[in-house]
Amino acid sequence: MALSKVIVSLMLLISLGFAVSSEAVVVDGYPAPKKPPVVVAPASPPKKSPVVVAPASAPIYYPAPSPIAVPPTSAASPPIYLPLRRLIAVQGVVFAKPCADFGFDTLMHSSPLPGVMVKMVCHGKPKDNALMLTAVTDKNGYFFIPPTKKVSEYGAQKRCRVFLHSPPAMSKFQHSTHMNSGLSGAYLRRTKSLTPLPFVLYTVGPFAYEPLPSVCHQKV
Image (cartoon, rainbow, N blue to C red):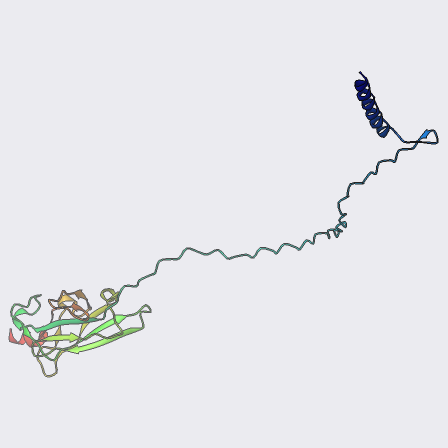
């Protein structure tokens, strides 16, 4: 019984000691003031220096360049190819008509006449500016006017004509005839050659000379 009382008394003392320690300390009959709690201000972040932005300058307006006038370009025209103009040569034959065929447009009894001069006359655009070329018949009565750079095939059939010019000297065939336009001028006829030629070949005639009327009339 006594032991249990002692234990109870010890427990009371222990509880009182805890109570005293937990209460405020009393000084001169008054409780000692409590120390205010220490408030630690939160660390403020470092302040950044303000960024000074320069005021924007007023925009500068430059005058717009005036448009450059570009001349219109025409579509490329196709190339022009001029026709090749070849040189020309002219050939023909002159015959001698006997009195039996005098006044008749026939060569039935005729023979080649050598030594006859023929001429070719080509008129330019001004007709007074004419070109004249001559040739003489050979023993077969054949004549050939060779090519010249002054005459090409362009317009030759319209601008050029061939005439009987003069009979052979010391020949009884002195009278020129109108056969195939020998007196008024024969136009050129294009001739197809059997072999390639470096020029265009034309033909006129055949032409003819006959004796003078007085000679033939004497024989009649």
